[in-house]
Image (cartoon, rainbow, N blue to C red; front, side, top):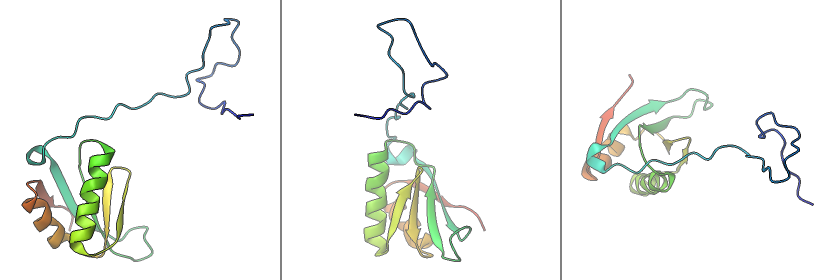
Length: 116
């Protein structure tokens, strides 16, 4: 038996309509990925909430999650480090902001260094 979550039912507990269907949350429509020349990316160094570890963050990507994951994969492989793609951001391990900026500019993205 499949257990359905009642938390996403928007407050409806019971309906007398035999054809009623619960709407379990709204699906977000992904926007179309902008071409690299129209992307406005920000590259920054971050140490907060990471146990003192330094990471390079790339923010501002507008497009599909698959395209963001592909860009993250390219950056990780060219920098020779690990990292991840979470919540619309690319995290690259280490202080490699200069290298990331060079790679993004070679790929045709508009990228700037942000933060201190």
